[in-house]
Image (tube, rainbow, N blue to C red; front, side, top):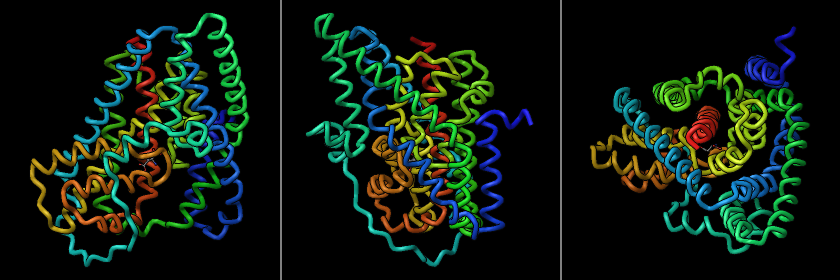
Length: 394
Ligand code: ASP
């Protein structure tokens, strides 16, 4: 029974039970769906103010521009390097396993309306015309952008104004963290309700039907999380990856259940600071940014999915096209918001770049939620590994 004392273990048990109940008694989960909704809403409730307060306080708390530059550049270098490694892993696995190559699919794609995403959209979405509106709408990137420049501007103020402003937002941040600690107590219940409903709704038939594709994505994600990221963590910080994962495991579990890096952000921040003892100044900057920009799992998945669609449509993709996939999958993962299925939408960028039909997305829709849960866990693990590495290097 001691095992069940920690929230982390209760959450794990909740996930296992939820899968079991979802499959064996699919009539039950809809009756408790409200609990899952409440948990998700509570998490979402804190995201917008938390992103602003944590990015702002960590930047202003760093104290001078050269330290910000130092940490900022290392963070971006880490994001770019690991996302690239993730896409390469995806491409290697998909070339070895070749899912869909021998499939005789009659193209029974589900019809979906997709709108192409362009690079100009991506740039425009970064700078807010009205930061209050971005905050109110929960648009993460423009909010981070504003918090960033506002933090920089604060550093140029005189001592008195700077301290006043900083203390205010630091107190806001602390109050939000206290609130998150209350919300975390609901995790096992919330996770049980969410996961059991998804399993009851989707079942496992689509996963079995697209098994070669699903297996390729799962193995590649596992390799990236357990080998590449763990090795990087060990080599750069000498931290035992398993022990580190064990400390912060609540975050990937919530990511798995919610399929949303943004909804997981409050938990990631809490475990990074409380369990992994990452300094607030680093976690408060690396994690909010990572939740939208650094998505290793999504990048990897987009590359595999594009190649799978090409295989199904019998479109041969050579080195040149795969380099395009590499570039666009990286961009598309940066552009994806930290919400469920965001990767599916930004994948239009990848498909367009290599001339694949956008309806191809319809082929993989049925298993997207399951793969989204896994790739989001990898996204969040990547952010938390980054936190530790950047702490060590700074
Ligand atoms: N759901 C993912 C996340 O929040 C994004 C995606 O790949 O769809 O990290």
